Amino acid sequence: MRIAPALHVLVVALLVAGCSSDGTDATSGSTSTTSPESVTADAGPDTVTPPEATTVEELLAVDRPIVLTHGGGENSHPTATPFAYAESVRAGVDVLDFDVQLTGDGVLVSHHDEDVDRTTDGSGLLADMTYEQAHALDAAYWYTDECSACEDQPADAYVYRGVRTGDVEPPEGYGPEDFALTSFEEMIERYPDHPLNIEIKGSYPEDVPAAQELARILTEQDRLDSAVVTAFDDQLAEAFHEAAPSVAITPGLDAMTRYVLAGEALPPERRIVQIPPEYEGVELLTPDFVERAHADGLVLWIWPNSRDWENADGYRRLLDDLAVDGINAADPETAVEVLNSGAGRDDTGGG
Image 1 (cartoon, rainbow, N blue to C red):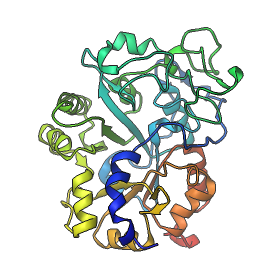
Image 2 (cartoon, rainbow, N blue to C red):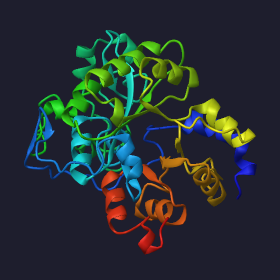
Image 3 (cartoon, rainbow, N blue to C red):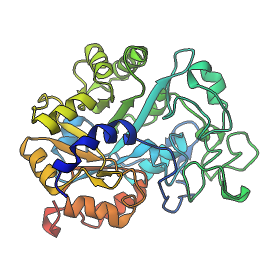
Image 4 (tube, rainbow, N blue to C red):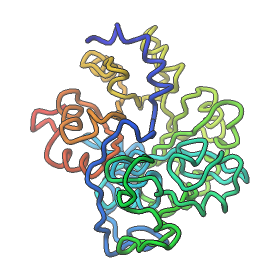
Protein backbone atom coordinates (compact mmCIF):
# COMPACT_ATOMS: atom_id res chain seq x y z
CA MET A 1 0.00 0.00 0.00
CA ARG A 2 1.29 3.44 -0.88
CA ILE A 3 1.39 6.14 1.77
CA ALA A 4 -1.46 8.21 0.27
CA PRO A 5 -4.38 6.03 1.48
CA ALA A 6 -2.89 6.06 4.95
CA LEU A 7 -2.51 9.79 5.39
CA HIS A 8 -5.68 10.19 7.44
CA VAL A 9 -4.37 7.79 10.09
CA LEU A 10 -0.94 9.36 10.43
CA VAL A 11 -2.22 11.92 12.91
CA VAL A 12 -3.75 9.17 15.03
CA ALA A 13 -0.67 7.01 14.67
CA LEU A 14 1.68 9.71 15.85
CA LEU A 15 -0.56 10.75 18.71
CA VAL A 16 -1.86 7.43 20.00
CA ALA A 17 0.71 4.85 19.03
CA GLY A 18 3.63 7.15 19.56
CA CYS A 19 6.24 5.80 21.92
CA SER A 20 3.67 3.42 23.38
CA SER A 21 4.72 1.11 26.15
CA ASP A 22 1.41 -0.33 27.25
CA GLY A 23 2.64 -3.90 27.31
CA THR A 24 -0.42 -5.23 25.50
CA ASP A 25 0.96 -5.66 22.00
CA ALA A 26 4.55 -6.59 22.58
CA THR A 27 6.27 -9.89 22.98
CA SER A 28 9.56 -9.91 24.72
CA GLY A 29 12.70 -11.62 23.67
CA SER A 30 14.43 -13.74 26.25
CA THR A 31 15.29 -11.69 29.30
CA SER A 32 18.95 -11.26 30.02
CA THR A 33 19.49 -12.20 33.65
CA THR A 34 23.21 -12.77 33.39
CA SER A 35 24.54 -9.39 34.41
CA PRO A 36 28.00 -7.99 33.84
CA GLU A 37 30.38 -8.61 36.70
CA SER A 38 31.35 -4.95 36.69
CA VAL A 39 27.83 -3.68 37.43
CA THR A 40 27.09 -1.95 40.72
CA ALA A 41 23.80 -0.73 42.11
CA ASP A 42 25.12 2.81 42.10
CA ALA A 43 26.56 3.20 38.63
CA GLY A 44 25.62 0.38 36.27
CA PRO A 45 28.44 -1.16 34.24
CA ASP A 46 31.73 0.50 35.16
CA THR A 47 33.71 -1.06 32.30
CA VAL A 48 31.63 -0.21 29.26
CA THR A 49 33.01 0.07 25.75
CA PRO A 50 32.29 3.67 24.75
CA PRO A 51 29.69 4.05 22.00
CA GLU A 52 30.93 4.71 18.48
CA ALA A 53 29.30 8.14 18.56
CA THR A 54 29.01 10.36 21.62
CA THR A 55 27.27 13.40 20.09
CA VAL A 56 24.31 13.78 17.76
CA GLU A 57 26.59 15.11 15.03
CA GLU A 58 28.80 12.03 15.31
CA LEU A 59 25.74 9.80 15.45
CA LEU A 60 24.39 11.15 12.16
CA ALA A 61 27.78 10.60 10.56
CA VAL A 62 28.00 6.92 11.50
CA ASP A 63 28.07 4.85 8.31
CA ARG A 64 25.46 2.31 9.42
CA PRO A 65 22.02 2.17 11.03
CA ILE A 66 21.86 2.65 14.78
CA VAL A 67 20.02 0.95 17.64
CA LEU A 68 18.21 2.88 20.35
CA THR A 69 16.87 1.18 23.46
CA HIS A 70 13.19 2.09 23.76
CA GLY A 71 12.64 2.89 27.43
CA GLY A 72 15.56 0.61 28.20
CA GLY A 73 14.05 -2.17 26.09
CA GLU A 74 10.69 -2.95 27.70
CA ASN A 75 10.29 -6.34 26.05
CA SER A 76 13.44 -7.71 27.61
CA HIS A 77 13.82 -5.65 30.81
CA PRO A 78 11.56 -3.87 33.30
CA THR A 79 10.90 -0.63 31.48
CA ALA A 80 12.79 2.56 32.31
CA THR A 81 14.74 1.03 35.20
CA PRO A 82 18.47 1.44 35.82
CA PHE A 83 18.73 -2.32 35.29
CA ALA A 84 17.17 -1.98 31.83
CA TYR A 85 19.58 0.72 30.72
CA ALA A 86 22.59 -1.11 32.15
CA GLU A 87 21.68 -4.27 30.26
CA SER A 88 21.06 -2.27 27.08
CA VAL A 89 24.45 -0.60 27.34
CA ARG A 90 26.00 -3.98 27.93
CA ALA A 91 24.34 -5.22 24.72
CA GLY A 92 25.93 -2.40 22.74
CA VAL A 93 23.14 0.05 21.91
CA ASP A 94 24.03 3.40 20.38
CA VAL A 95 21.41 5.61 22.02
CA LEU A 96 19.49 5.58 25.30
CA ASP A 97 15.81 6.46 24.91
CA PHE A 98 13.80 8.09 27.72
CA ASP A 99 10.32 9.37 28.45
CA VAL A 100 10.44 12.13 31.06
CA GLN A 101 8.01 13.98 33.28
CA LEU A 102 7.93 15.66 36.68
CA THR A 103 6.95 14.32 40.07
CA GLY A 104 4.81 16.49 42.28
CA ASP A 105 7.87 18.01 43.92
CA GLY A 106 9.53 18.84 40.62
CA VAL A 107 11.97 15.98 40.04
CA LEU A 108 12.28 14.92 36.39
CA VAL A 109 11.99 11.14 36.22
CA SER A 110 12.30 8.44 33.60
CA HIS A 111 8.72 7.18 33.30
CA HIS A 112 6.24 6.74 30.45
CA ASP A 113 2.74 6.89 31.92
CA GLU A 114 1.16 9.76 33.80
CA ASP A 115 0.33 7.30 36.56
CA VAL A 116 2.35 4.48 38.12
CA ASP A 117 -0.32 1.77 38.01
CA ARG A 118 0.77 -0.20 34.94
CA THR A 119 4.39 -0.92 35.83
CA THR A 120 4.75 -0.59 39.62
CA ASP A 121 3.21 -1.88 42.83
CA GLY A 122 1.73 1.56 43.48
CA SER A 123 -1.18 3.56 42.12
CA GLY A 124 -1.96 7.17 41.39
CA LEU A 125 -0.67 10.04 39.32
CA LEU A 126 3.04 10.73 39.30
CA ALA A 127 2.23 14.43 39.61
CA ASP A 128 0.59 13.72 42.97
CA MET A 129 3.68 12.00 44.40
CA THR A 130 6.96 13.19 45.78
CA TYR A 131 10.09 11.74 44.24
CA GLU A 132 10.76 9.86 47.47
CA GLN A 133 7.36 8.18 47.21
CA ALA A 134 7.77 7.32 43.53
CA HIS A 135 11.34 6.09 43.97
CA ALA A 136 10.26 3.68 46.71
CA LEU A 137 7.97 1.79 44.31
CA ASP A 138 8.84 -1.55 42.72
CA ALA A 139 9.23 -0.58 39.05
CA ALA A 140 9.58 -4.22 37.98
CA TYR A 141 6.42 -5.39 39.71
CA TRP A 142 4.37 -6.26 36.61
CA TYR A 143 7.19 -7.25 34.27
CA THR A 144 7.37 -10.81 32.90
CA ASP A 145 9.45 -12.45 30.21
CA GLU A 146 6.34 -12.65 28.03
CA CYS A 147 4.87 -9.22 28.61
CA SER A 148 6.35 -5.90 29.62
CA ALA A 149 3.47 -5.15 31.97
CA CYS A 150 0.68 -7.70 32.48
CA GLU A 151 -1.44 -8.48 35.52
CA ASP A 152 -2.75 -11.90 34.49
CA GLN A 153 0.39 -14.03 34.66
CA PRO A 154 1.25 -16.77 37.19
CA ALA A 155 3.01 -15.42 40.27
CA ASP A 156 6.31 -17.06 39.37
CA ALA A 157 6.33 -15.25 36.01
CA TYR A 158 7.13 -11.94 37.69
CA VAL A 159 10.83 -12.65 37.73
CA TYR A 160 12.02 -9.36 39.24
CA ARG A 161 9.09 -8.64 41.55
CA GLY A 162 10.39 -7.97 45.03
CA VAL A 163 13.97 -7.14 44.11
CA ARG A 164 13.26 -3.46 44.74
CA THR A 165 11.90 -4.16 48.22
CA GLY A 166 14.65 -6.59 49.19
CA ASP A 167 12.33 -9.60 49.26
CA VAL A 168 14.03 -11.23 46.25
CA GLU A 169 17.73 -11.58 45.54
CA PRO A 170 18.81 -9.28 42.69
CA PRO A 171 20.68 -10.50 39.62
CA GLU A 172 24.41 -10.69 40.19
CA GLY A 173 26.02 -7.28 40.27
CA TYR A 174 22.77 -5.38 40.77
CA GLY A 175 20.85 -4.12 43.77
CA PRO A 176 17.36 -2.98 44.78
CA GLU A 177 17.98 0.56 43.50
CA ASP A 178 18.36 -0.79 39.97
CA PHE A 179 14.65 -1.71 39.93
CA ALA A 180 13.32 1.65 41.10
CA LEU A 181 11.60 4.49 39.33
CA THR A 182 14.60 6.80 39.03
CA SER A 183 15.40 10.42 38.28
CA PHE A 184 16.47 11.24 34.75
CA GLU A 185 19.50 13.15 35.98
CA GLU A 186 20.80 10.16 37.92
CA MET A 187 20.25 7.93 34.89
CA ILE A 188 22.27 10.01 32.47
CA GLU A 189 25.06 10.60 34.98
CA ARG A 190 25.74 6.87 34.76
CA TYR A 191 26.32 7.03 31.00
CA PRO A 192 28.12 10.27 30.15
CA ASP A 193 29.16 9.10 26.68
CA HIS A 194 25.89 7.77 25.28
CA PRO A 195 23.67 9.97 23.10
CA LEU A 196 20.15 10.46 24.45
CA ASN A 197 16.73 10.39 22.80
CA ILE A 198 14.19 12.05 25.07
CA GLU A 199 10.44 12.50 24.80
CA ILE A 200 8.85 15.13 27.02
CA LYS A 201 5.49 13.68 28.01
CA GLY A 202 2.38 15.79 28.25
CA SER A 203 1.19 18.96 26.59
CA TYR A 204 1.52 22.73 26.46
CA PRO A 205 1.37 24.72 28.68
CA GLU A 206 0.93 22.33 31.59
CA ASP A 207 4.21 20.53 31.04
CA VAL A 208 6.45 23.47 30.18
CA PRO A 209 8.09 23.13 33.63
CA ALA A 210 9.24 19.63 32.61
CA ALA A 211 10.69 21.02 29.38
CA GLN A 212 12.51 23.72 31.30
CA GLU A 213 13.85 21.26 33.85
CA LEU A 214 15.10 19.01 31.06
CA ALA A 215 16.90 21.97 29.51
CA ARG A 216 18.50 22.78 32.86
CA ILE A 217 19.73 19.22 33.38
CA LEU A 218 21.14 18.86 29.88
CA THR A 219 22.91 22.19 30.24
CA GLU A 220 24.39 21.45 33.66
CA GLN A 221 25.41 17.94 32.63
CA ASP A 222 27.04 19.25 29.43
CA ARG A 223 24.79 17.05 27.29
CA LEU A 224 23.37 19.65 24.90
CA ASP A 225 25.24 18.20 21.94
CA SER A 226 24.39 14.59 22.73
CA ALA A 227 20.61 14.85 23.07
CA VAL A 228 17.68 14.59 20.67
CA VAL A 229 14.41 15.84 22.15
CA THR A 230 10.85 15.30 20.99
CA ALA A 231 7.33 16.06 22.16
CA PHE A 232 4.11 15.23 20.35
CA ASP A 233 2.86 18.69 21.27
CA ASP A 234 4.71 21.10 18.98
CA GLN A 235 4.26 24.01 21.39
CA LEU A 236 5.83 21.97 24.18
CA ALA A 237 8.77 21.18 21.90
CA GLU A 238 9.06 24.89 21.11
CA ALA A 239 9.12 25.72 24.81
CA PHE A 240 12.05 23.36 25.23
CA HIS A 241 13.75 24.82 22.16
CA GLU A 242 13.51 28.30 23.63
CA ALA A 243 15.23 27.07 26.79
CA ALA A 244 17.91 25.04 24.98
CA PRO A 245 18.10 26.24 21.35
CA SER A 246 21.20 24.22 20.44
CA VAL A 247 19.63 20.82 21.17
CA ALA A 248 18.40 18.73 18.24
CA ILE A 249 14.61 18.43 18.12
CA THR A 250 12.47 16.03 16.10
CA PRO A 251 9.29 17.22 14.37
CA GLY A 252 6.13 17.05 16.44
CA LEU A 253 2.64 16.01 15.44
CA ASP A 254 1.65 19.18 13.57
CA ALA A 255 4.92 19.49 11.67
CA MET A 256 4.87 15.85 10.58
CA THR A 257 1.23 16.09 9.51
CA ARG A 258 2.00 19.12 7.34
CA TYR A 259 5.03 17.35 5.86
CA VAL A 260 3.04 14.26 4.90
CA LEU A 261 -0.26 15.86 3.90
CA ALA A 262 0.86 19.15 2.37
CA GLY A 263 4.45 18.44 1.43
CA GLU A 264 5.57 21.28 3.68
CA ALA A 265 9.29 21.06 4.33
CA LEU A 266 10.50 20.39 7.82
CA PRO A 267 12.91 22.87 9.40
CA PRO A 268 16.48 21.89 8.48
CA GLU A 269 17.47 21.53 12.12
CA ARG A 270 14.66 18.99 12.62
CA ARG A 271 15.77 16.27 10.26
CA ILE A 272 15.42 13.27 12.59
CA VAL A 273 11.95 11.78 12.06
CA GLN A 274 10.51 9.20 14.47
CA ILE A 275 7.43 7.22 13.39
CA PRO A 276 6.08 3.64 13.61
CA PRO A 277 6.12 1.39 10.53
CA GLU A 278 2.34 0.95 10.60
CA TYR A 279 -0.76 1.71 12.59
CA GLU A 280 -3.89 -0.47 12.82
CA GLY A 281 -2.78 -2.46 9.80
CA VAL A 282 -2.13 0.57 7.59
CA GLU A 283 1.40 1.07 6.34
CA LEU A 284 3.02 4.37 7.18
CA LEU A 285 6.61 3.41 6.53
CA THR A 286 6.49 2.47 2.85
CA PRO A 287 9.38 2.34 0.36
CA ASP A 288 7.94 5.48 -1.26
CA PHE A 289 7.89 7.34 2.03
CA VAL A 290 11.43 6.24 2.88
CA GLU A 291 12.65 7.34 -0.55
CA ARG A 292 10.96 10.72 -0.22
CA ALA A 293 12.25 11.28 3.32
CA HIS A 294 15.80 10.37 2.40
CA ALA A 295 15.63 12.59 -0.70
CA ASP A 296 14.60 15.43 1.61
CA GLY A 297 17.63 14.78 3.80
CA LEU A 298 15.66 13.29 6.67
CA VAL A 299 16.89 10.61 9.06
CA LEU A 300 14.38 7.88 9.94
CA TRP A 301 14.44 6.43 13.44
CA ILE A 302 11.64 3.89 13.71
CA TRP A 303 9.96 2.63 16.87
CA PRO A 304 8.37 -0.70 15.82
CA ASN A 305 5.76 -0.71 18.61
CA SER A 306 4.27 -4.05 17.51
CA ARG A 307 4.87 -7.73 18.07
CA ASP A 308 5.02 -8.14 14.29
CA TRP A 309 8.16 -6.01 14.17
CA GLU A 310 9.85 -6.46 17.56
CA ASN A 311 11.80 -9.59 16.62
CA ALA A 312 14.81 -10.54 14.53
CA ASP A 313 12.82 -10.87 11.30
CA GLY A 314 11.04 -7.56 11.86
CA TYR A 315 14.25 -5.71 12.63
CA ARG A 316 15.88 -7.23 9.56
CA ARG A 317 12.95 -6.09 7.39
CA LEU A 318 13.32 -2.56 8.69
CA LEU A 319 17.05 -2.51 8.02
CA ASP A 320 17.27 -4.43 4.75
CA ASP A 321 13.92 -3.95 3.02
CA LEU A 322 13.07 -0.43 4.18
CA ALA A 323 16.58 0.94 4.78
CA VAL A 324 15.72 2.85 7.94
CA ASP A 325 18.46 4.74 9.72
CA GLY A 326 17.70 3.61 13.24
CA ILE A 327 15.52 1.25 15.27
CA ASN A 328 14.18 2.29 18.67
CA ALA A 329 13.95 -1.29 19.86
CA ALA A 330 11.96 -2.83 22.68
CA ASP A 331 14.32 -5.81 22.42
CA PRO A 332 17.69 -4.09 22.08
CA GLU A 333 19.78 -7.23 22.42
CA THR A 334 18.09 -8.79 19.40
CA ALA A 335 18.28 -5.54 17.41
CA VAL A 336 22.01 -5.25 18.07
CA GLU A 337 22.53 -8.89 17.08
CA VAL A 338 20.66 -8.34 13.81
CA LEU A 339 22.65 -5.20 13.06
CA ASN A 340 25.93 -6.94 13.88
CA SER A 341 24.99 -9.79 11.54
CA GLY A 342 25.25 -7.33 8.65
CA ALA A 343 21.64 -6.22 8.26
CA GLY A 344 21.26 -2.72 6.90
CA ARG A 345 24.80 -2.61 5.52
CA ASP A 346 25.41 -1.66 1.91
CA ASP A 347 27.89 -4.49 1.45
CA THR A 348 25.23 -7.07 2.36
CA GLY A 349 22.50 -5.66 0.19
CA GLY A 350 20.91 -3.59 2.93
CA GLY A 351 20.04 0.09 2.86
